[in-house]
Length: 129
Image (cartoon, rainbow, N blue to C red; front, side):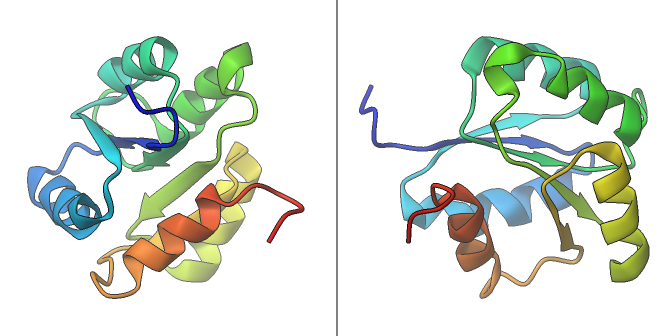
């Protein structure tokens, strides 16, 4: 596989939300993976070692804080941007995401126009423009 292709793991239980995210990102050539729950997301993250993880904080099986902590314990994923994609009010979401160890938040519903640029910004190497 092409090493320049970025892999994005979407951990989202709502299939409509997952489809919107997948459709918004598909034209950009990312390798997109979808996990419908936290347990599956944890296994996929450990196996696939994505370049970015989009995490719904309201999953049915694993609470967002627990899943974020488990993902951060995997050494190969310690540097991977973990972004909370949530319907919580933006101020609350930002506080929660920071407390959970996430690198940022994107509010739902996502804006299909703005979303690809938001994702690209999180994939940029830190310290380089």
